[in-house]
Amino acid sequence: MRVGITADRRWDEQARMFTDRGVDVVHAPTMRTIDLTDDEALRTITSALAEGPPDYLIVTTGMGMRRWLEAAGRWGLDTALLAGLAANSRIVARGAKANSAARGANLDVWWRAPDETMQEIVDHLAAHGDVAQARVALQLFEPEGHPSTELLRAMSGELVEVPVYQWALPHDPGPAEHLVDAAIAGEVDAITFTAQPAVHNLFRIAGHRRDALRDAFNSRVVASCVGPVCASAATEEGVQDPIWPDPPRLVAMVRQLVARLTES
Image (cartoon, rainbow, N blue to C red):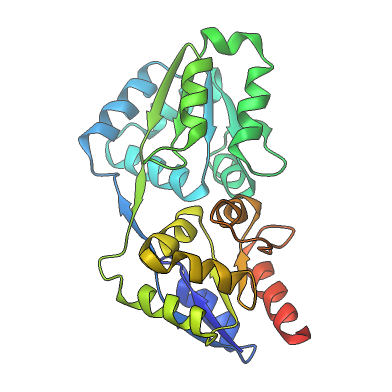
């Protein structure tokens, strides 16, 4: 069994879990994470939210929330920010990791999306009439533009975007290009994805071979995603049957995929 790993973060942990189970791995990152916590723009936004807490704070990722609070701490803004959020804001968590990060900061989570999707958050907030006049802070899910961002902007009185990090293509796309070759040639049994951009970027890197890559996923290569949100990106790219575990966790993804490959 041979599995391609597209993650840039925690990929070595994922690789160890596979190799411990007798699976060969190929690491081919399709994305890189750019830290924005030293940017003056984030500091300005953080200062403004510390002085005037939002009515709602949407926490979309655990990593993003933790990095934001770490940056606030370096600027001496964390105490005021957290006090203001605790006293004045309804905290909305997209998923388990976001929920854990918020609670780890001693913030009560007002509502958590059951299936960890941004559409659930949009729909839930739309049912509350006060949102039209509310100030909503959004720890950005996809800084390059997720459809939910514009929906939230349109429905809220004011949307404050909190950009903590952004995703980009890898500096060296060579390994990902070789992974595309391997998938098309049937030299890997599965490819794992732990974020939506990892899926979209693999197809972007495939270029004119996108159709051949899609055919490979729809015939012999398993698209293994960490959760339903990530799997939705695979579906958008035309992958018919991506798999994901319940609960959506890295260890569960590895176990599910090994079981799937062992059965086949």
